[in-house]
Length: 158
Image 1 (cartoon, rainbow, N blue to C red):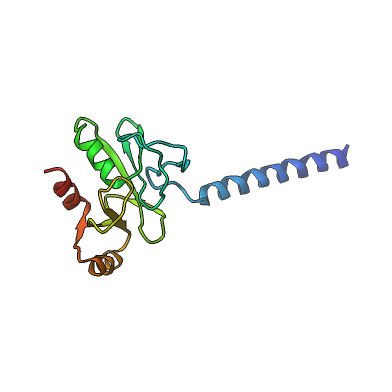
Image 2 (image 1 turned 60 degrees about the vertical axis):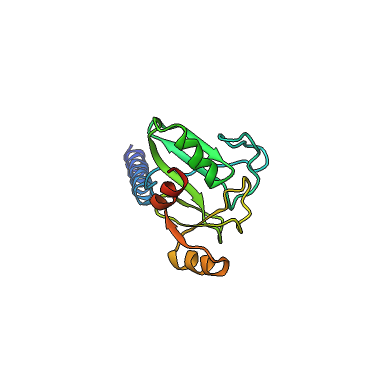
């Protein structure tokens, strides 16, 4: 019986050790730091404002309401129009794509360039940038200026 007890104790110890390692690794895993952008099936999902297919990742946008309803858009301008028409919807988070990398970024912290020289899907002509310096360089190339999110919303929603 001594050997059986020893084996059982060793198994319990190893089991507890494995559980402890799993807990520690789970605690160290990257945690979500707030709302996350949606997955968009490009060429399949439709814009919640205009009903057109969302085809161009670089111009796609999304919003998450305080009621946790995610809306998807084919153009940053369509997102702004959608919410201007529905002021009762509280927005928890805005998402846009960086014009250069096409990675999702938070709309509230992005920098924007608006110009008729930007060929966006619905013609709003808005491009978003993660970095102000990249936005300024792009704006300089096309003779436009850089806007913050609040400034863009004020211009688009008088």
